[in-house]
Image (cartoon, rainbow, N blue to C red; front, side, top):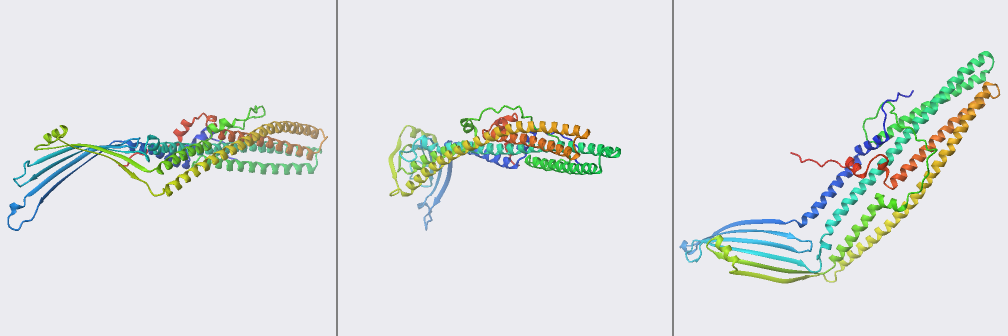
Length: 483
């Protein structure tokens, strides 16, 4: 026998639990976080780098007789600077070198001698690697990857919401079907009591009583099957919700909505769907990513021609301060300007890779067109399912009203002796079947509506959610560092 209903489960609550507890979503949520961090990785390419190094060195050559003929020397050097890569492709570096040299020989004019210099160097590509439109490609691709990861997560979330809500209304149908079967059992029990009494007074035969007993047994079996359907549907729903705790009792849920007066409305426009469908939007981002790849590949096919330039100021004196002072007074200087050229003979590999990326871009453009055609067909099919579902609800509602009235008439005729008990049972079975067909038509229409709203990504709004609030449910918190 069916367990007593206990906890009430709201459909939106089931959806939120499914989003919170689905492990696939949590895994993909980490992918979204990593894609967002990759943007910072690519931005850091343009960060200023600071570098420094220092060395000390001493030497003294071996002597056979006179050690003073081979003096000892001691050198200290320090190098420091900053470098920065610009989005124009240029790499700028500013460095300073300081050296201190001392010797045990007395002939050196400055002992110790301090030398310092300031050098600025530049390397600017003139063909391959020139311009921000090329050097910002890795950053732009990281941004596209982040958007694609978020859309992939959104698409998965919509699928989970669709499956969970469908499972919820399957459970609602199971509860309604159980009520139909239970009501039929109550009628069977009442008819058996009436026929037993009618047989006692001679108004019914033993066959009528046997038919009543068979009808009651059949009704009890139908109630048991309906109860099992609740169990199966409830387990499936909680599996969709990702929980490990399955309730022992039957939870109560919302009733199937009355769609007999529902307005059919108009078909969702294709433009609205394309503007919101994650799968379509992902493909558009794929095309943008391949367009960037084509641009990068075309750039790599260009000859490498770099302009190099440098200017250095140097000074030497008996103290570090004076050495750098003389450098700033331009006592010593050095400059460099040049052109570097490099290109593989024939550039066959670069040209082939460039053609491959163009082919891949064309493939993704065809795939986008294919997805658009699929969405158009799916939208039309979903719309027909919705319209058919509503019309079926209206038709089965009329059939149910008719079957109910016919059963009431057959019962009145049977009580008046104008109809057989078999005709009464057939009328009751017809009423039960009409009731189940009506409930089934509502379920089909509700599911058609769910599929439509999943297609244009408006399903979260059905439960008072926006994508931002949905993402806040899905995305995991940033992991804390382990001690």
